[in-house]
Length: 293
Image (cartoon, rainbow, N blue to C red; front, side, top):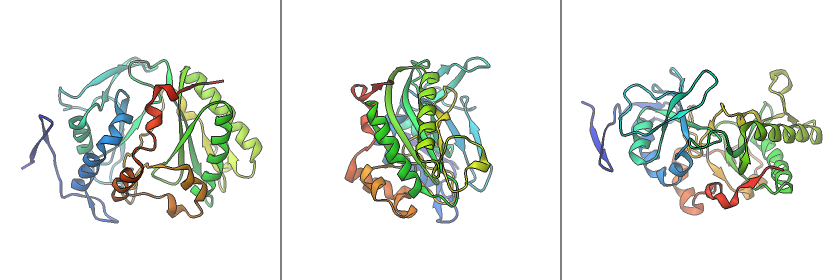
């Protein structure tokens, strides 16, 4: 029998709690739900008011993995949704606004991916993002070098950048911006990626072509497109271990000499939040958002 749990007055059926989702460490679905419940305070502000895509892995990362963008069948009527524009016509997507919605979504077993705009203003980007993806034998250590260059370059334009691990091999850089469309933000991000490659040609590539990427860091600027999404801060990833897309300090980026230094699993996050709070909280302050040059 599926247990029924009440979360802030909402009744939830949380299923298969003993199921092992991460076989390498024995991490279960119950532990996934516990992770999200205890991380909600810092996670929810980064989800709220943003249409969410779910990368689902209900049988673990070695099972079927698939994207769900539209509102899933069986979604409770108390889960908020929003109509969002798409090239093929408007669609309806989930908004994870509160703890009951978060726990319902976590029960689906999914990574959370969000756009760089709010549901209320889909024509205006409020985030700038760079996905730094290392091509072997390059690692996150190389990503850190590129991230530090991008941080200084963005600062020169009056834009303050923040870093988080991708929860996989690389790093994400995020900044709060205002007054620009996704198209304009993409153009700006691409220009900086091209400039990074010109400045560090042995280290950086800005094109997605696979044959160009071994030993280099691909600076993926394309996730600024209005239709694209990026892994939300604090989301678990569908990897062999319960890795998290975890905010990091610039001191940690500067000091990174081994990939293991920037690899964080679910049990690591609560102590980090206790020590640092939400390192990405400034992204949520409209006063910190800068206009693009």
